[in-house]
Every structure is written in C-alpha cells, then in structure tokens.
Picture 1 (cartoon, rainbow, N blue to C red):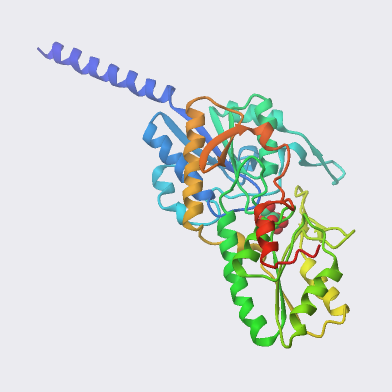
Picture 2 (picture 1 turned 135 degrees about the horizontal axis):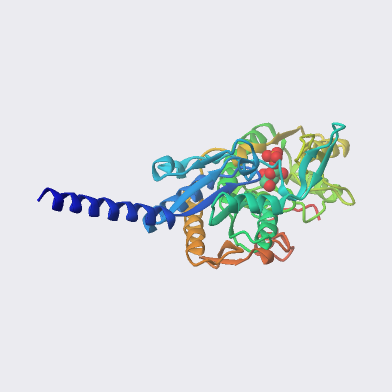
Length: 390
Ligand code: F6P
C-alpha cells in the first residue's frame, strides 16, 4: 500500500514538473521600447500590450529602459511588465519605461582612446543581443527616427513591430498619432488664455507651438482657437503680408491680433530657428525662437501695438492624455500584440479611415506627412480669414 502511494506521488510530481517545464519552455518573451520624445499615450500602449498578452496567455512582457539603451547597458536595464505593474497607467503621461533621443543604434556614440567621440552602426550587435536574451518579438514605440531604427533591426532579422508616436502627427502612413490631439487641446486651452489678454490690451499675442517639419498642431490650434494668423513650416511667410493683416485689424480703431506659429516656421528665403543639441548622441537641432524673431520683425515694421510672445514648449507633451488618445493608444497596443500573434513582423500599426491596420515599416518611413495648400483644413482656415503670411 505504501509502495503504491509512493508511486502515485512520484507520478503526480513528475507530470507536474513536466507541465511547468513545458509552460516555461513555450513562454514567449516580448520586449517593449519607447524612443524619442515622450508623448501622452505611451503608457496606454504599454498597458494594452501587457493586458493582451496576459489575456492570450503564453507570453511575458518586458520593457527596455530608455529605448534600447536598457538592452545595451551593463548591467542590463530591463524590467518585467506585469499586469499589476501597468494597472491604471493609461491615464498617466510620459512612459514608465523611460525614453531618450540619445543612443540611436544607427549612429551610436563611441568614445575614442583620445577622448573624442565618433559614431558607429551597432544594429547587428543590438539584434544579436536581443535574440540572445531570448526575446521572440520586439515592439518599438516611437516616431520616424525610431521607426527607421525598427526597419534596420528588422532587416537584421529581428522580429519587430512599430507603433507610431509623435505629437507632431507627421507620419505619412497614419492619419493620426496618439498624443497629437492632447497637444492640440493643451495648445488651444493656452491660446484661449492669451486671447483674453490680446482683447483687453489691444495687443498682438504670439504663441509658438511644436511642429518641427509640419504645422499640424499650429493649424488645428489656429482653427480651434480663432487665430487671425497661422504660420507653419510648409508655407514660408512674407513679413509684409503678416504686417498687412495686423494693420488691417487695427485700422478701424483699437484691435487685437492672435498669432499661432509653429517652431519650424520660417520667413521667406529663411531657415528654421534652432541650435544643434550639445548632448552626445542627440543629433537633433533643438528648434525654438521663431516667435521672438517674428516679434522683432513686427516691431521693426513700425507696428505701434504691443507684441508679446509665449513659447509653449514641452507643456504640450506633458500631463495626462485626453480620452481620444488613450483610446487610440490602447487600440494600437492591441493591434501590435495581434501582429506578434500572427508573426506579421516588419509592420507598423496605423490608424487610417477610422480603423486600425498596418503597413510595412519601410513604407511608413518613406516620407513625412506635411500640410499642403489644398488640405481641407488649410482651405477651411483661409475661408474664415486666417492668414498664412502667403
Ligand atoms: O518630435 C516631437 C517634438 O516634440 C518636436 O515637436 C520638437 O521639436 C521636439 O520633439 C523637441 O524635442 P526635445 O524634447 O528633445 O526638446
């Protein structure tokens, strides 16, 4: 009898052990990375992927801290993302796995023995390291720069999915990116606050918003906020036309003017205002200063009205995502997981024609999405009297 009991316990033990081994052997590992500037909605994407993975079963999700720097650093900076860890984070701005615009693996900064810095492409090493760590799939959440990295890693053999992110909304493959609508809401709320001062003091109020190559935030804010002038990177402005519009508003007595200007806007035959970043590994030119330059131009033109400038800056990227962005980010996270499930790698999630789908990353990174003169919102703005300085 005791012998039979011994056999039974033994059998149960070994079958349990085999089950545990089997489960862990087939547990797939997903690595998430968020790269580039932070953006409201990143956390909602992370949460959606973790929750989808949990619901599906058979997956573990990890996050590389500060884009791929977490994988490259020694010791590794990779955190396990459990449903408990991501609970409720969809309402929070920023990204719980941090982000950076330093350390692009295509031009990775490397210090030479003489102390000077050079760059090298470390994508092959990065791919190998991620694979050696046992990750079956990677989701890279980021803008055009990040998706260019995704494409190279995909070509190196990495199972990667891209999720588009940018408040600038300038990715051509997707009608909208999460974070953009939140940025427009913040900019519009701020603009409304400046309008009251413009009216009360008969001033020209200038608000500089983000928008490196594209004027999506500026244009949406101009229409929603009721600006008289909207200056965007796609249309070089003629200062004479801008001053004409301002003077017209003051001709009939005490007027006021509200202007929204994208950071990447530029005067005729001019170039965008900015300075090269001093940070090692950050190749971006930091834009800013066009509003103050325009103020100077308006004052030089002899305009007697007082001109004030506000540079909105990173306020536009901060705080909680609005409901729409939480929803869009969640839907994109779920789609990213579905693409992993179907082994559909090398794809970037998109939002087009009111639906979620995907495109090849190499298509998505071909060209930025810029405003054209015949875009319906440019025509809308022009029809209600908004000047683009053209
Ligand atoms: O690309 C998004 C963006 O917000 C741009 O509009 C802006 O020029 C840039 O990031 C600012 O980057 P940083 O956070 O490095 O100053």
